Amino acid sequence: MKATPLLSHCFEWLARPRLAHTFAFAYTLVSPDVRVYQCQTHRHRQHFRRKSRATKPARNLSRVVSTRQAVNGGVIRNQGLSAGEQKCDPAALTPSRYRGLPMRIHYVVTSLEGGGAEFIIPDIAKVIMDLGHEIHVFALKPRDRLTEPRLIEAGVPYTLLSDHEASKFGSIYRYAKAVRASRPDVIWTSLSQATRVGQVVAGMFGIPVVSWKHSSDAKAHIRRNQRRCKLWIADSRDVALYLEDSMGVEKDRIAIWPVFNPASPTTPIPRWDGTGPLRIGSTGRLHPQKNYDLLIRAVDRIRSDDPHIYDRLDVSIAGDGPLRDDLQNLITSLALQDKVRLVGWVSDIPAYLQSLHLYVQPSVYEGMCIGAHEAMAAGLPIVATPVGELRRSVQPGRTGALLGGDIVSGIGAAIRGFIARPEMLKVFGENAREYVERTMGAGAFAANGAEVVRRIEHDVLKGRVRPAAARAIEPDVASRSRARSDATGRRPPVVTGTD
Image (cartoon, rainbow, N blue to C red; front, side, top):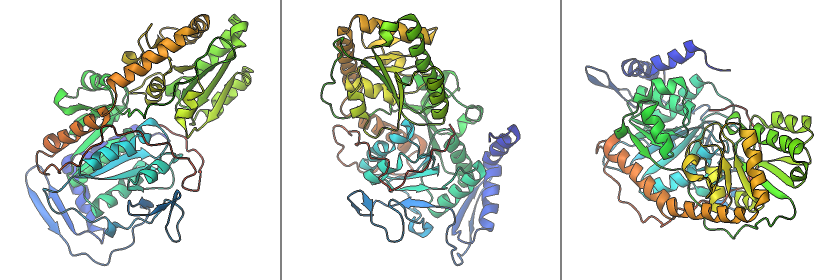
């Protein structure tokens, strides 16, 4: 259910600094395990102390995984609990009482689903930990939980605050309990619902917020409350321009960290020589943003316009999401089952890309678009709409083709062009791989992350936390191998919804 305008105004009311602190203090009065609460209003600052009574067990702080857990053969050894799970004990999250220590970061994300913003979290966490800081991931809801195996594999501590599709008020309540148990130096949010919850809780406890922006699109409440974030982190140059031009964020409150961490070079993909089927594919969530219905309709139009080209096509889409049934029904209604396949979630993306000859991304909007850049790094030519970073990466006549106007007709024209000149698949693919290696190659991901962390240390916290002594950073924080979705021993159904 979508939030009503009245509900949206309630959230904004709670996030106002003076009211938020009043609400937070009232909240501590009914919570028996409060030790110290610092209330800071517009005119004065007071300290409220209250002796702790017997601490009640935390309710609904449902999952936390510690890096100290032993991993043996992909199984977390934990008596009485399923793999990857451990009851959350607030007492184990010791509050940080001293400034001048490494930063304690709460990384708040909307869910653990297998989207690009969630899938890159282990690589982000590695950069932060390599710089000597602490990070703990908090997910508001589970959804398909496809990112969870990667967090376990990488040893990133995380807490799943609810095992169902929680309301915003429920998420605020549960995360406020976690913050009270272990107060961070900064709250780092990703995706719109997590940003809303992070802003409210940060206002309650007087903690600075930094937030990701992953696309050139924003909900109304994000636009209205953009000043509550001390620093906005754009995942591409295009998103940085959107923050400045469309959302009115000052340039000195914008940092750029492209969330694409290229994997180690793979073996060359097999090139299409004009014989056999031309294998066309795409990876991503089955969501209206991705426009996959237009790719399906393009195949249908090719059948009516060029039957001989249609006979040579083999199209697949890798991913899962709320539109899976609708897309499958469209394929069935157009009688395209023998040409278009929804292959579902793919754990080994490099292997899937190795099976393709051409990659298509007809999105409505994007930020970095990790899937398309992974395809470029694998050496595939790209056919895409000019959105997000793709408007720079996909260079017509060099790395692929940009779609404008009628997208369905544009996809068909691009496919006809490559079938007429199969050698251009190899030329464009090699140019795409060279572009990624030149602009996003070894060390770029870690270097950009280190600069963002420096901005947080010096601009957001303004020296209140002494920069930690950095450990040696590898030349390239390589993308971790994709963990199998059953690494935790379960595969819950997909929960529909979007940010």
